[in-house]
Image (cartoon, rainbow, N blue to C red; front, side):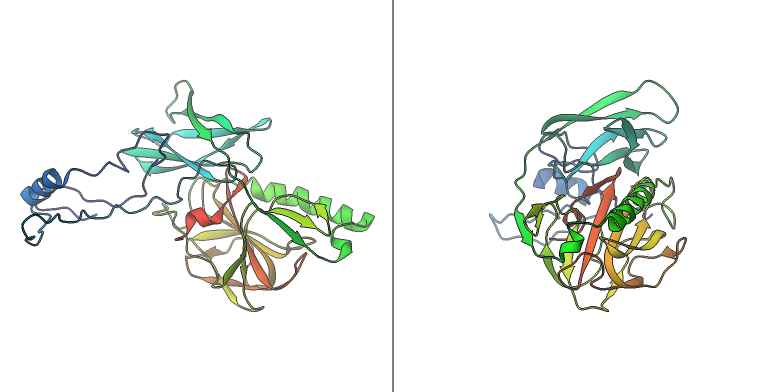
Length: 325
């Protein structure tokens, strides 16, 4: 951590809430006025601006974006400032009859809850519960879910993948129960130590052929909305880890085909489906950029592509919020 000759500690961290409906945290401060900011930085010897022509206005340094970006819609993400505390607060979201742990990032100066909003979430007021790790009563932190209109997509697939035989139905139910256990993974410590950033790299190059949240209609029959991002790529194209992660599941499933799940810590998981090859085993540790599987056309598909899913507090959210536009 670099320190100036005046003892000013300079740090780079993920931003906290920048929602227009939420107060800004000190991690996402409002920019200072130019003259005041320039004077402050100049006094500290941290900024040297070139002379500008008379009447010209110098550009302010650009504030880095927050990751993931805030979008408080069904399937989106809320970033809620928890304020300062000596230890990491504990945050929970109420989903159905279960209290689910929420990802909390930051440090003693500023903690932020990163909340995944289910696609089935009701519009309007919502909240999480927050308690301090050293005890004390719980408090509720509110946020608002606003509407978003998702498009509809009609697909033709083999009839056996829509109208399941008794054997395929039984297989699907076994796989669904197993996947529910995988999705409940919550590890306190991110693989490889503290997670410095939640900005992800796109795991495979290619055209985004299907977006998150699409209302899917298979052979004329409505099904669950699309819970990930589809990226079209040739069979055999390498797929890389978007963040450091630990492999928590490898399998071949009826709908998803070849599948790998990665755990990035504190309830942040990613899923990779329809794979032709899976070159990892449960327990393997990956660094960001490590190739670990390959694009395929297994499971219920219309062609080779990667189905990439991102999960927060056991709910699938839009992967586009974690990557540059």
